[in-house]
Image (cartoon, rainbow, N blue to C red; front, side, top):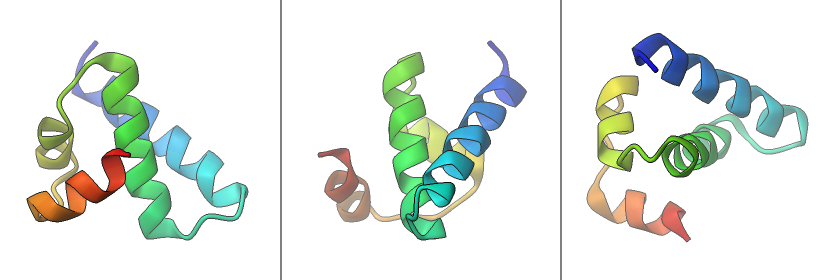
Length: 64
C-alpha cells in the first residue's frame, strides 16, 4: 500500500461521513482515525501525510 492508496481511503471515508451528516472537519478527523485503525498506521503519520497541523490534545480527543 502506497501513499496514494492511503489518501484515497481517507478521501472515500471522509465523503461517506459528510454524506451521513457530519461536518467536514469532524469527518476528516474520523476518516483519519478509521484509516489509521484499519491499515495500522499511526495517526501522527497520517496527520503528516495529509499535511494538517493538529495538537496532540486534538488527536487524543478524537481517538475515543
